[in-house]
Length: 151
Image (cartoon, rainbow, N blue to C red; front, side):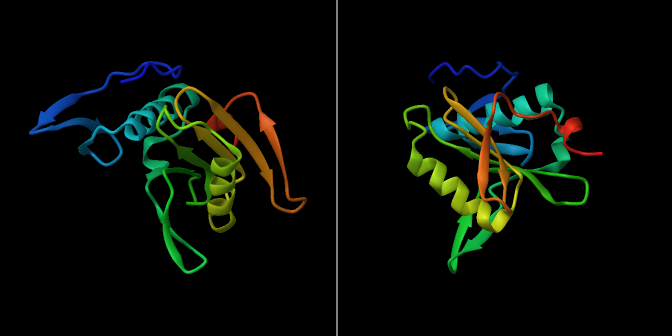
């Protein structure tokens, strides 16, 4: 696996036949360790351990419909009422974060409605605050702490 610039975390790996698996604390089961999954697991642990997001309010691969097509988000952080706070789009480290990736996340967010977007490939991270009324995005220096988003 490629080194990421997200903080390290205690991960549990196991082998199943040809597949290397990683323990997913949200799904509470082992999942195939792909490069994108490696990034997603780092982000999950970063949000829980360093930004204070409650584990029970993180939703992986949440389904939604856009233009009559079923899509899945990589990760959504919710508030206590179930309203989306942060939409996360993860890519493998070999996939650069481009305008096309940003467009994909913004398109998903039209149906999700999260006020924050995070795009990451584990090496590059971009976080934006979204204003749906003025239809503008403001880039943030870091992912806001959960405590600063909820009252």
